[in-house]
Image (spheres, rainbow over the protein chains, first blue to last red):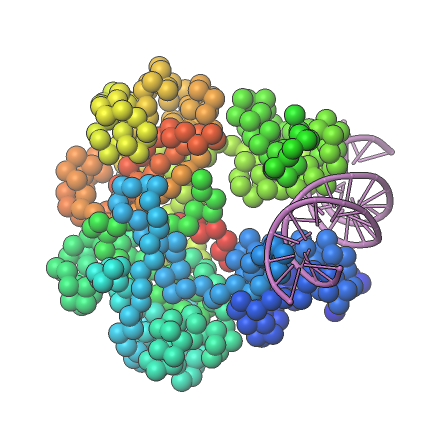
Amino acid sequence: MIRSQLRRQPLYTQIKTLLSQRIGEGAWQPNEMLPSEWELAEELGVSQGTVRKALTEMVTEGMLYRQQGKGTFVADVMGDWAGPGMVPAGLFRSRLELPAAELLGCSRVNAPDELAEALGLKRGAALVRVRQLWRLQAEALAVDDAYLPAERIEGLDAKLVRQSGGSVYNALHRHYAVRPVLVQEQLRAVPLPREEGVLLGVAEGVPVLSITRLTASLQGEPVEWRQRYCLTRTMAYVPDHGRVA
Amino acid sequence: MIRSQLRRQPLYTQIKTLLSQRIGEGAWQPNEMLPSEWELAEELGVSQGTVRKALTEMVTEGMLYRQQGKGTFVADVMGDWAGPGMVPAGLFRSRLELPAAELLGCSRVNAPDELAEALGLKRGAALVRVRQLWRLQAEALAVDDAYLPAERIEGLDAKLVRQSGGSVYNALHRHYAVRPVLVQEQLRAVPLPREEGVLLGVAEGVPVLSITRLTASLQGEPVEWRQRYCLTRTMAYVPDHGRVA
DNA sequence: GAGTGGTCTAGACCACTTA
DNA sequence: AAGTGGTCTAGACCACTCG
Protein backbone atom coordinates (compact mmCIF):
# COMPACT_ATOMS: atom_id res chain seq x y z
CA MET A 1 0.00 0.00 0.00
CA ILE A 2 2.78 2.35 0.84
CA ARG A 3 4.79 3.26 -2.24
CA SER A 4 1.83 3.71 -4.58
CA GLN A 5 2.93 4.43 -8.11
CA LEU A 6 1.02 7.66 -8.56
CA ARG A 7 1.88 9.02 -5.19
CA ARG A 8 0.53 12.45 -4.53
CA GLN A 9 1.53 12.31 -0.90
CA PRO A 10 5.12 12.10 0.35
CA LEU A 11 6.06 8.73 1.81
CA TYR A 12 6.37 10.07 5.34
CA THR A 13 2.83 11.46 5.15
CA GLN A 14 1.53 8.09 4.03
CA ILE A 15 3.35 6.49 6.94
CA LYS A 16 1.78 8.94 9.36
CA THR A 17 -1.66 8.13 8.03
CA LEU A 18 -1.03 4.40 8.17
CA LEU A 19 0.27 4.46 11.73
CA SER A 20 -2.57 6.75 12.86
CA GLN A 21 -5.06 4.27 11.45
CA ARG A 22 -3.39 1.34 13.17
CA ILE A 23 -3.34 3.22 16.47
CA GLY A 24 -7.00 4.13 16.00
CA GLU A 25 -7.76 0.47 15.43
CA GLY A 26 -6.00 -0.36 18.67
CA ALA A 27 -3.02 -2.13 17.15
CA TRP A 28 -1.02 -0.62 20.01
CA GLN A 29 -2.48 0.60 23.27
CA PRO A 30 -1.46 3.86 24.96
CA ASN A 31 2.04 3.60 26.44
CA GLU A 32 2.76 0.53 24.36
CA MET A 33 6.00 0.53 22.39
CA LEU A 34 5.99 0.68 18.62
CA PRO A 35 8.36 -1.42 16.53
CA SER A 36 11.76 0.23 16.23
CA GLU A 37 12.42 2.67 13.42
CA TRP A 38 14.47 0.06 11.60
CA GLU A 39 11.78 -2.58 11.89
CA LEU A 40 9.13 -0.21 10.60
CA ALA A 41 11.44 0.85 7.78
CA GLU A 42 11.94 -2.74 6.73
CA GLU A 43 8.27 -3.60 7.00
CA LEU A 44 7.23 -0.59 4.94
CA GLY A 45 10.08 -0.80 2.48
CA VAL A 46 11.44 2.66 3.12
CA SER A 47 14.58 4.01 4.73
CA GLN A 48 14.91 4.55 8.47
CA GLY A 49 15.21 8.30 7.93
CA THR A 50 11.81 8.42 6.30
CA VAL A 51 10.17 6.50 9.15
CA ARG A 52 11.95 8.82 11.54
CA LYS A 53 10.51 11.91 9.88
CA ALA A 54 7.00 10.49 10.12
CA LEU A 55 7.44 9.56 13.79
CA THR A 56 8.94 12.96 14.61
CA GLU A 57 5.88 14.74 13.26
CA MET A 58 3.56 12.43 15.17
CA VAL A 59 5.53 13.19 18.32
CA THR A 60 5.14 16.95 17.86
CA GLU A 61 1.44 16.39 17.22
CA GLY A 62 1.16 14.58 20.53
CA MET A 63 0.17 11.19 19.16
CA LEU A 64 3.45 9.50 20.17
CA TYR A 65 6.28 10.11 22.57
CA ARG A 66 9.88 8.96 22.51
CA GLN A 67 12.33 7.87 25.14
CA GLN A 68 15.92 7.83 24.10
CA GLY A 69 17.45 4.40 24.40
CA LYS A 70 14.08 2.74 24.96
CA GLY A 71 11.69 3.27 22.12
CA THR A 72 8.71 5.12 20.67
CA PHE A 73 5.37 4.84 22.45
CA VAL A 74 1.72 5.63 21.86
CA ALA A 75 0.66 8.67 23.88
CA ASP A 76 -2.23 8.65 26.29
CA VAL A 77 -5.57 9.88 25.04
CA MET A 78 -6.09 13.60 25.64
CA GLY A 79 -7.45 14.26 29.12
CA ASP A 80 -10.96 15.65 29.54
CA TRP A 81 -9.57 18.95 30.79
CA ALA A 82 -7.65 19.17 27.51
CA GLY A 83 -5.75 22.35 28.33
CA PRO A 84 -2.42 22.90 30.02
CA GLY A 85 -4.13 23.93 33.24
CA MET A 86 -4.63 26.78 35.66
CA VAL A 87 -2.17 29.12 37.29
CA PRO A 88 -2.51 31.58 40.19
CA ALA A 89 -3.71 34.82 38.59
CA GLY A 90 -0.85 37.21 37.92
CA LEU A 91 2.00 34.78 38.68
CA PHE A 92 3.61 34.01 35.36
CA ARG A 93 6.42 31.69 36.36
CA SER A 94 4.46 29.35 38.61
CA ARG A 95 3.57 25.72 38.09
CA LEU A 96 0.52 24.79 36.04
CA GLU A 97 -2.10 22.89 38.01
CA LEU A 98 -4.53 20.38 36.57
CA PRO A 99 -7.96 20.11 38.22
CA ALA A 100 -9.46 16.71 38.99
CA ALA A 101 -12.81 15.54 37.60
CA GLU A 102 -15.81 14.25 39.48
CA LEU A 103 -18.59 12.62 37.50
CA LEU A 104 -21.97 14.14 38.29
CA GLY A 105 -24.07 12.06 35.94
CA CYS A 106 -25.22 11.05 32.48
CA SER A 107 -28.53 11.76 30.80
CA ARG A 108 -30.14 11.66 27.38
CA VAL A 109 -31.30 14.85 25.71
CA ASN A 110 -32.42 16.00 22.30
CA ALA A 111 -29.98 18.18 20.40
CA PRO A 112 -30.77 21.90 20.26
CA ASP A 113 -30.35 23.27 16.74
CA GLU A 114 -26.99 24.95 17.39
CA LEU A 115 -25.57 21.74 18.75
CA ALA A 116 -26.96 19.49 16.05
CA GLU A 117 -25.44 21.83 13.51
CA ALA A 118 -21.99 21.74 15.11
CA LEU A 119 -22.04 17.95 15.42
CA GLY A 120 -23.38 17.42 11.92
CA LEU A 121 -26.58 15.75 13.13
CA LYS A 122 -30.26 16.08 12.34
CA ARG A 123 -32.31 18.51 14.41
CA GLY A 124 -33.37 17.00 17.66
CA ALA A 125 -31.07 14.00 17.36
CA ALA A 126 -30.51 12.04 20.55
CA LEU A 127 -27.48 13.04 22.59
CA VAL A 128 -25.86 11.76 25.74
CA ARG A 129 -24.97 14.50 28.16
CA VAL A 130 -22.14 13.87 30.62
CA ARG A 131 -21.77 16.32 33.46
CA GLN A 132 -18.49 16.71 35.34
CA LEU A 133 -17.38 18.88 38.22
CA TRP A 134 -13.75 20.00 38.33
CA ARG A 135 -11.95 20.61 41.59
CA LEU A 136 -8.60 22.12 42.41
CA GLN A 137 -7.52 21.03 45.88
CA ALA A 138 -11.07 20.25 46.94
CA GLU A 139 -12.38 23.62 45.78
CA ALA A 140 -14.96 23.57 42.98
CA LEU A 141 -13.50 25.26 39.92
CA ALA A 142 -15.59 24.40 36.88
CA VAL A 143 -18.52 22.40 35.53
CA ASP A 144 -18.59 20.67 32.18
CA ASP A 145 -21.39 19.42 30.01
CA ALA A 146 -20.19 17.11 27.28
CA TYR A 147 -22.69 16.21 24.55
CA LEU A 148 -22.13 13.17 22.35
CA PRO A 149 -24.23 11.68 19.54
CA ALA A 150 -26.12 8.80 21.15
CA GLU A 151 -26.14 6.81 17.95
CA ARG A 152 -22.39 6.70 17.74
CA ILE A 153 -21.83 5.69 21.35
CA GLU A 154 -24.65 3.27 22.11
CA GLY A 155 -24.45 2.21 25.72
CA LEU A 156 -22.36 5.04 27.14
CA ASP A 157 -23.54 5.69 30.68
CA ALA A 158 -22.26 6.77 34.07
CA LYS A 159 -21.04 3.29 34.92
CA LEU A 160 -18.98 3.05 31.78
CA VAL A 161 -17.42 6.47 32.31
CA ARG A 162 -16.58 5.54 35.88
CA GLN A 163 -14.89 2.39 34.65
CA SER A 164 -12.74 4.63 32.47
CA GLY A 165 -11.52 6.62 35.42
CA GLY A 166 -14.22 9.27 35.09
CA SER A 167 -12.87 10.36 31.72
CA VAL A 168 -15.17 10.66 28.74
CA TYR A 169 -12.26 10.58 26.31
CA ASN A 170 -10.87 7.47 27.90
CA ALA A 171 -14.26 5.80 27.57
CA LEU A 172 -14.46 6.84 23.92
CA HIS A 173 -11.10 5.26 23.28
CA ARG A 174 -11.53 2.07 25.23
CA HIS A 175 -15.10 1.24 24.28
CA TYR A 176 -15.68 2.92 20.93
CA ALA A 177 -12.19 3.00 19.40
CA VAL A 178 -12.28 6.77 19.06
CA ARG A 179 -9.19 8.86 19.77
CA PRO A 180 -10.64 12.35 20.17
CA VAL A 181 -8.75 15.32 18.75
CA LEU A 182 -9.49 18.95 19.49
CA VAL A 183 -11.07 20.86 16.62
CA GLN A 184 -11.45 24.26 18.25
CA GLU A 185 -11.96 25.89 21.61
CA GLN A 186 -13.84 29.17 21.98
CA LEU A 187 -13.57 31.37 25.04
CA ARG A 188 -15.97 33.97 26.31
CA ALA A 189 -16.74 35.78 29.54
CA VAL A 190 -20.37 35.34 30.58
CA PRO A 191 -22.52 35.65 33.69
CA LEU A 192 -22.71 32.32 35.53
CA PRO A 193 -26.09 30.67 34.83
CA ARG A 194 -28.30 29.72 37.76
CA GLU A 195 -27.97 25.96 37.47
CA GLU A 196 -24.18 25.96 37.24
CA GLY A 197 -24.05 28.46 40.10
CA VAL A 198 -25.71 25.92 42.34
CA LEU A 199 -23.26 23.22 41.33
CA LEU A 200 -20.27 25.45 41.94
CA GLY A 201 -21.64 26.96 45.12
CA VAL A 202 -21.28 30.46 43.72
CA ALA A 203 -23.81 33.23 43.22
CA GLU A 204 -25.60 33.36 39.88
CA GLY A 205 -24.34 36.07 37.56
CA VAL A 206 -20.69 36.36 38.57
CA PRO A 207 -18.40 36.55 35.53
CA VAL A 208 -17.10 33.13 34.52
CA LEU A 209 -15.01 31.84 31.67
CA SER A 210 -17.17 30.00 29.14
CA ILE A 211 -15.15 27.45 27.20
CA THR A 212 -16.89 25.79 24.29
CA ARG A 213 -15.11 22.95 22.59
CA LEU A 214 -15.66 20.78 19.56
CA THR A 215 -13.90 17.42 19.38
CA ALA A 216 -13.60 15.04 16.46
CA SER A 217 -12.30 11.58 15.68
CA LEU A 218 -9.03 11.06 13.84
CA GLN A 219 -11.11 10.87 10.69
CA GLY A 220 -12.53 14.34 11.34
CA GLU A 221 -16.02 13.22 12.33
CA PRO A 222 -17.40 15.36 15.21
CA VAL A 223 -17.78 13.30 18.37
CA GLU A 224 -18.28 15.79 21.17
CA TRP A 225 -19.47 19.30 21.91
CA ARG A 226 -18.56 20.52 25.35
CA GLN A 227 -19.51 23.54 27.41
CA ARG A 228 -17.48 24.51 30.46
CA TYR A 229 -18.04 27.25 33.00
CA CYS A 230 -14.81 27.99 34.81
CA LEU A 231 -14.36 30.25 37.83
CA THR A 232 -11.37 32.57 37.58
CA ARG A 233 -11.47 34.45 40.85
CA THR A 234 -8.00 33.39 41.98
CA MET A 235 -6.78 31.10 39.21
CA ALA A 236 -6.30 31.97 35.54
CA TYR A 237 -6.71 29.77 32.49
CA VAL A 238 -3.56 29.30 30.43
CA PRO A 239 -4.12 28.50 26.76
CA ASP A 240 -1.71 26.13 25.07
CA HIS A 241 0.16 28.71 23.01
CA GLY A 242 2.06 26.52 20.56
CA ARG A 243 5.57 27.47 21.55
CA VAL A 244 6.15 29.39 24.72
CA ALA A 245 9.37 30.27 26.49
CA MET B 1 32.27 29.26 16.32
CA ILE B 2 30.03 26.48 15.16
CA ARG B 3 31.66 23.09 15.58
CA SER B 4 33.15 23.73 19.01
CA GLN B 5 35.23 20.83 20.20
CA LEU B 6 33.40 20.18 23.42
CA ARG B 7 29.99 20.55 21.95
CA ARG B 8 27.18 19.94 24.36
CA GLN B 9 24.59 21.17 21.92
CA PRO B 10 23.77 19.47 18.61
CA LEU B 11 24.96 21.37 15.55
CA TYR B 12 21.46 22.23 14.42
CA THR B 13 20.71 23.78 17.81
CA GLN B 14 23.84 25.91 17.57
CA ILE B 15 22.77 26.98 14.10
CA LYS B 16 19.33 27.98 15.39
CA THR B 17 20.91 30.07 18.12
CA LEU B 18 23.32 31.69 15.70
CA LEU B 19 20.65 32.57 13.16
CA SER B 20 18.31 33.85 15.88
CA GLN B 21 21.05 36.15 17.10
CA ARG B 22 21.75 37.43 13.61
CA ILE B 23 18.08 38.07 13.03
CA GLY B 24 17.84 39.82 16.39
CA GLU B 25 20.76 42.02 15.36
CA GLY B 26 18.92 42.91 12.18
CA ALA B 27 21.19 41.06 9.78
CA TRP B 28 18.03 40.34 7.79
CA GLN B 29 14.83 42.33 7.98
CA PRO B 30 11.37 40.75 8.12
CA ASN B 31 10.41 39.25 4.76
CA GLU B 32 14.01 39.36 3.61
CA MET B 33 15.40 36.17 2.12
CA LEU B 34 18.07 34.19 3.92
CA PRO B 35 21.00 32.65 2.05
CA SER B 36 20.04 29.32 0.53
CA GLU B 37 20.44 26.15 2.54
CA TRP B 38 23.52 25.22 0.54
CA GLU B 39 25.13 28.60 1.05
CA LEU B 40 24.51 28.49 4.79
CA ALA B 41 25.85 24.93 4.90
CA GLU B 42 29.04 25.98 3.18
CA GLU B 43 29.50 29.07 5.34
CA LEU B 44 29.00 27.12 8.54
CA GLY B 45 30.91 24.07 7.45
CA VAL B 46 28.05 21.62 7.91
CA SER B 47 25.89 19.59 5.57
CA GLN B 48 22.79 20.96 3.91
CA GLY B 49 20.65 18.49 5.82
CA THR B 50 21.79 19.90 9.14
CA VAL B 51 21.03 23.47 8.07
CA ARG B 52 17.68 22.23 6.85
CA LYS B 53 16.82 20.72 10.23
CA ALA B 54 17.66 24.00 11.99
CA LEU B 55 15.59 26.03 9.53
CA THR B 56 12.66 23.62 9.78
CA GLU B 57 12.47 24.06 13.54
CA MET B 58 12.68 27.82 13.22
CA VAL B 59 9.82 27.67 10.73
CA THR B 60 7.61 25.70 13.11
CA GLU B 61 8.51 28.19 15.84
CA GLY B 62 7.30 31.02 13.64
CA MET B 63 10.64 32.80 13.27
CA LEU B 64 10.98 31.99 9.56
CA TYR B 65 8.76 30.96 6.70
CA ARG B 66 9.53 29.11 3.51
CA GLN B 67 8.28 29.36 -0.05
CA GLN B 68 9.03 26.43 -2.24
CA GLY B 69 11.11 27.35 -5.25
CA LYS B 70 11.88 30.81 -3.85
CA GLY B 71 13.65 30.70 -0.53
CA THR B 72 13.51 31.00 3.22
CA PHE B 73 12.44 34.32 4.73
CA VAL B 74 12.40 36.07 8.08
CA ALA B 75 8.87 36.19 9.49
CA ASP B 76 7.16 39.39 10.50
CA VAL B 77 7.31 40.39 14.13
CA MET B 78 4.33 39.07 16.10
CA GLY B 79 1.34 41.38 15.83
CA ASP B 80 0.14 43.24 18.91
CA TRP B 81 -3.03 41.17 18.99
CA ALA B 82 -0.80 38.09 19.21
CA GLY B 83 -3.57 35.50 19.01
CA PRO B 84 -5.24 33.81 16.09
CA GLY B 85 -8.29 36.03 16.40
CA MET B 86 -11.99 36.08 17.07
CA VAL B 87 -14.79 33.97 15.70
CA PRO B 88 -18.60 34.34 15.87
CA ALA B 89 -19.61 32.63 19.12
CA GLY B 90 -20.78 29.06 18.51
CA LEU B 91 -19.69 28.81 14.89
CA PHE B 92 -16.75 26.45 14.82
CA ARG B 93 -15.92 26.28 11.16
CA SER B 94 -15.98 29.99 10.37
CA ARG B 95 -13.12 32.27 9.45
CA LEU B 96 -10.95 33.80 12.15
CA GLU B 97 -11.08 37.57 12.22
CA LEU B 98 -8.29 39.86 13.38
CA PRO B 99 -9.29 43.17 14.98
CA ALA B 100 -7.52 46.40 14.05
CA ALA B 101 -5.68 48.59 16.55
CA GLU B 102 -6.15 52.27 17.23
CA LEU B 103 -3.55 54.04 19.36
CA LEU B 104 -5.14 55.93 22.23
CA GLY B 105 -1.98 57.29 23.81
CA CYS B 106 1.27 56.85 25.71
CA SER B 107 2.05 57.90 29.26
CA ARG B 108 4.63 57.31 31.96
CA VAL B 109 3.68 55.56 35.17
CA ASN B 110 5.42 53.98 38.13
CA ALA B 111 5.30 50.21 38.33
CA PRO B 112 2.89 48.69 40.84
CA ASP B 113 4.52 45.88 42.83
CA GLU B 114 2.87 43.06 40.91
CA LEU B 115 4.02 44.48 37.65
CA ALA B 116 7.56 45.25 38.76
CA GLU B 117 7.80 41.68 39.97
CA ALA B 118 6.65 40.21 36.67
CA LEU B 119 9.00 42.41 34.66
CA GLY B 120 11.93 41.85 36.98
CA LEU B 121 12.23 45.53 37.92
CA LYS B 122 12.62 47.45 41.13
CA ARG B 123 9.47 48.60 42.92
CA GLY B 124 8.12 51.77 41.45
CA ALA B 125 10.37 51.63 38.39
CA ALA B 126 9.37 53.93 35.55
CA LEU B 127 7.17 52.36 32.89
CA VAL B 128 5.72 53.52 29.61
CA ARG B 129 2.07 52.68 29.24
CA VAL B 130 0.66 52.33 25.72
CA ARG B 131 -3.09 52.21 25.39
CA GLN B 132 -4.77 50.70 22.34
CA LEU B 133 -8.36 50.25 21.27
CA TRP B 134 -9.25 47.24 19.14
CA ARG B 135 -12.06 47.34 16.62
CA LEU B 136 -13.71 44.66 14.55
CA GLN B 137 -15.53 46.24 11.63
CA ALA B 138 -15.75 49.64 13.35
CA GLU B 139 -17.17 48.13 16.53
CA ALA B 140 -15.06 48.51 19.69
CA LEU B 141 -14.00 45.06 20.87
CA ALA B 142 -11.17 45.42 23.37
CA VAL B 143 -8.78 47.79 25.13
CA ASP B 144 -5.15 47.06 25.85
CA ASP B 145 -2.68 48.55 28.26
CA ALA B 146 0.88 47.59 27.45
CA TYR B 147 3.51 48.40 30.08
CA LEU B 148 7.18 48.53 29.14
CA PRO B 149 10.28 49.31 31.23
CA ALA B 150 11.07 52.96 30.43
CA GLU B 151 14.78 52.43 30.90
CA ARG B 152 14.97 49.82 28.19
CA ILE B 153 13.02 51.80 25.62
CA GLU B 154 14.14 55.38 26.11
CA GLY B 155 12.21 57.64 23.77
CA LEU B 156 9.23 55.42 23.04
CA ASP B 157 6.20 57.66 22.58
CA ALA B 158 2.97 57.90 20.64
CA LYS B 159 4.70 59.38 17.63
CA LEU B 160 7.15 56.51 17.43
CA VAL B 161 4.41 53.90 17.76
CA ARG B 162 2.42 55.63 15.05
CA GLN B 163 5.46 55.54 12.78
CA SER B 164 5.49 51.79 13.33
CA GLY B 165 1.96 51.38 12.09
CA GLY B 166 0.44 51.65 15.55
CA SER B 167 2.15 48.45 16.66
CA VAL B 168 4.14 48.36 19.88
CA TYR B 169 5.95 45.19 18.83
CA ASN B 170 6.89 46.69 15.51
CA ALA B 171 8.30 49.73 17.29
CA LEU B 172 10.27 47.48 19.63
CA HIS B 173 11.78 45.70 16.68
CA ARG B 174 12.54 48.68 14.48
CA HIS B 175 13.84 51.08 17.11
CA TYR B 176 15.15 48.88 19.91
CA ALA B 177 16.18 45.69 18.10
CA VAL B 178 13.85 43.57 20.22
CA ARG B 179 11.86 40.73 18.67
CA PRO B 180 9.21 40.04 21.30
CA VAL B 181 8.21 36.46 22.07
CA LEU B 182 5.22 35.39 24.12
CA VAL B 183 6.04 34.01 27.54
CA GLN B 184 2.53 33.29 28.78
CA GLU B 185 -1.03 34.45 28.43
CA GLN B 186 -3.50 34.18 31.30
CA LEU B 187 -7.26 34.36 30.81
CA ARG B 188 -9.94 35.26 33.29
CA ALA B 189 -13.52 36.44 33.29
CA VAL B 190 -13.94 39.66 35.24
CA PRO B 191 -16.41 42.53 35.55
CA LEU B 192 -15.50 45.35 33.17
CA PRO B 193 -13.83 48.18 35.13
CA ARG B 194 -15.31 51.67 34.95
CA GLU B 195 -12.52 53.30 32.95
CA GLU B 196 -12.41 50.60 30.28
CA GLY B 197 -16.18 50.63 30.11
CA VAL B 198 -16.07 54.25 29.04
CA LEU B 199 -13.52 53.50 26.35
CA LEU B 200 -15.55 50.59 24.99
CA GLY B 201 -18.88 52.32 25.30
CA VAL B 202 -20.25 49.52 27.45
CA ALA B 203 -21.73 49.51 30.93
CA GLU B 204 -19.36 48.97 33.83
CA GLY B 205 -19.51 45.48 35.33
CA VAL B 206 -20.48 43.35 32.34
CA PRO B 207 -18.41 40.17 32.14
CA VAL B 208 -15.36 40.60 29.94
CA LEU B 209 -12.42 38.44 29.06
CA SER B 210 -9.30 39.60 30.87
CA ILE B 211 -6.15 38.62 29.00
CA THR B 212 -2.87 39.22 30.77
CA ARG B 213 0.28 38.66 28.81
CA LEU B 214 3.99 38.66 29.52
CA THR B 215 6.39 39.17 26.61
CA ALA B 216 10.15 38.76 26.52
CA SER B 217 13.05 39.32 24.18
CA LEU B 218 14.72 36.44 22.36
CA GLN B 219 17.19 36.38 25.25
CA GLY B 220 14.36 35.82 27.71
CA GLU B 221 14.43 39.28 29.25
CA PRO B 222 10.89 40.53 30.03
CA VAL B 223 9.97 43.48 27.83
CA GLU B 224 6.23 43.93 28.19
CA TRP B 225 3.32 43.23 30.49
CA ARG B 226 -0.05 43.69 28.86
CA GLN B 227 -3.61 43.76 30.14
CA ARG B 228 -6.52 43.41 27.74
CA TYR B 229 -10.24 43.59 28.37
CA CYS B 230 -12.10 41.93 25.54
CA LEU B 231 -15.85 41.94 24.96
CA THR B 232 -17.27 38.55 24.04
CA ARG B 233 -20.94 39.25 23.56
CA THR B 234 -21.09 38.01 19.99
CA MET B 235 -17.51 37.00 19.21
CA ALA B 236 -15.43 34.37 20.98
CA TYR B 237 -11.69 34.29 21.56
CA VAL B 238 -9.89 31.35 19.96
CA PRO B 239 -6.64 30.31 21.63
CA ASP B 240 -3.82 29.07 19.45
CA HIS B 241 -4.06 25.40 20.35
CA GLY B 242 -0.75 24.10 19.03
CA ARG B 243 -2.07 21.68 16.45
CA VAL B 244 -5.73 21.72 15.56
CA ALA B 245 -7.63 20.04 12.78
C1' DG C 1 17.65 26.54 -17.46
C1' DA C 2 19.24 27.94 -13.03
C1' DG C 3 18.14 28.30 -8.37
C1' DT C 4 15.37 27.22 -4.56
C1' DG C 5 13.10 24.24 -1.17
C1' DG C 6 11.14 19.16 -0.52
C1' DT C 7 11.83 14.21 -0.31
C1' DC C 8 14.41 10.02 0.09
C1' DT C 9 18.31 6.95 0.58
C1' DA C 10 22.40 4.55 2.70
C1' DG C 11 25.54 4.60 5.89
C1' DA C 12 28.11 6.19 9.91
C1' DC C 13 28.66 7.21 14.59
C1' DC C 14 26.97 8.85 19.24
C1' DA C 15 24.10 8.65 23.66
C1' DC C 16 21.19 6.31 26.43
C1' DT C 17 18.82 2.14 28.50
C1' DT C 18 18.57 -2.48 29.79
C1' DA C 19 20.17 -6.88 30.81
C1' DA D 1 26.84 -6.15 24.60
C1' DA D 2 22.68 -5.42 22.21
C1' DG D 3 18.98 -2.49 21.06
C1' DT D 4 16.97 1.89 20.87
C1' DG D 5 16.55 6.76 19.55
C1' DG D 6 19.56 11.14 18.11
C1' DT D 7 22.75 13.40 15.01
C1' DC D 8 25.22 14.11 10.84
C1' DT D 9 26.90 13.36 6.18
C1' DA D 10 26.90 12.98 0.98
C1' DG D 11 24.48 12.43 -2.74
C1' DA D 12 20.39 11.87 -5.64
C1' DC D 13 16.25 13.32 -7.63
C1' DC D 14 11.73 15.90 -7.66
C1' DA D 15 8.63 20.18 -7.62
C1' DC D 16 8.20 24.79 -7.91
C1' DT D 17 9.45 29.75 -9.32
C1' DC D 18 11.43 33.03 -12.10
C1' DG D 19 13.79 35.27 -15.79
